Amino acid sequence: MARPELGTKRICPSCSARFYDLEKRPIECPKCHFTFEPEA
Image (cartoon, rainbow, N blue to C red):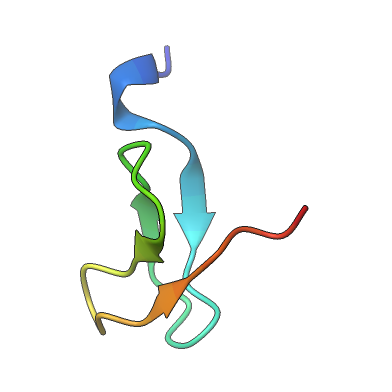
């Protein structure tokens, strides 16, 4: 079961790493530190 406190599962557009966004904005990849806004 998904844990809602982790936020949404994302895929980094720069390095393709999978991670949870922790409901933070802007979203930052923990692997390559690429920062992006989610698409609408």
